[in-house]
Length: 311
Image (cartoon, rainbow, N blue to C red; front, side):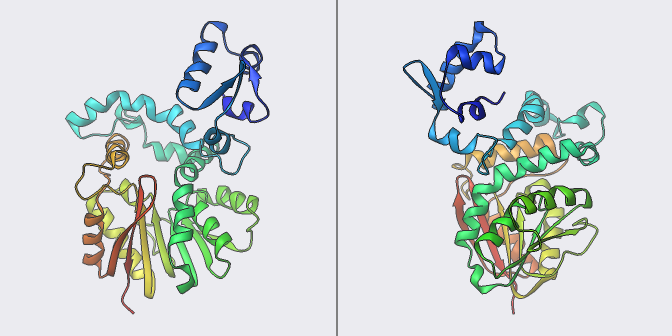
């Protein structure tokens, strides 16, 4: 409804905010006060305003906006989670495919508006971790970067902005290209961040010093995970690095609730995807030939797993 974007302009009283958002008086006050109780809004002398976090992250006009993932959840995921019991009993996805419709990704990529919303959601859920990667990974040792399954391109954009010496490329299906290029241009990096079209199962990955798989690996089965890691190994220059990040589950499988819930989301959304521990990913990387493997926390529930291709 744009509550936080509206209040980013200036604080408003109940009657004004209710009218601006077109809400019925019966529920409006309880709704806004519930947001106060949740810490998402503040109320001072009868006027509502954003909390510092919502002001930064949920104003659609700010580049720090991460609400795209909430919009996607609102339009799709919440309803599918009503069928979690069915997923647990059958092991089958509970999204559009449950009703015999085409894969949601087929429909998604055929509709430019829905595709843009999805890709924006991927930027929203990934941006904080992308910033952390740009700060924590030793980019000074490398000259080229390919982000596989790049979506809008927030990771290569973030890396390119912080490390001008790195040549960055986003690799994804051709339909993603226009959205990627629009995002790169909006960030003032046209000509510095490139797009390469391809299917990461059907086509070789572009060669680079660093290849990233950001919120990608958890979508796929164990065999498909191993294929992607092996393809990254083959595409890397000698001495290059593979960086995988997801909401990596802690090895004891007892602390990262977000990672475990994300794995259940993969149950609901995909035929065989699942999230995994750092130890799991290190094992798959070593199978492919990587050395020097390590796990490093990024931010929130996200960690990266790094493997080095021998020189």
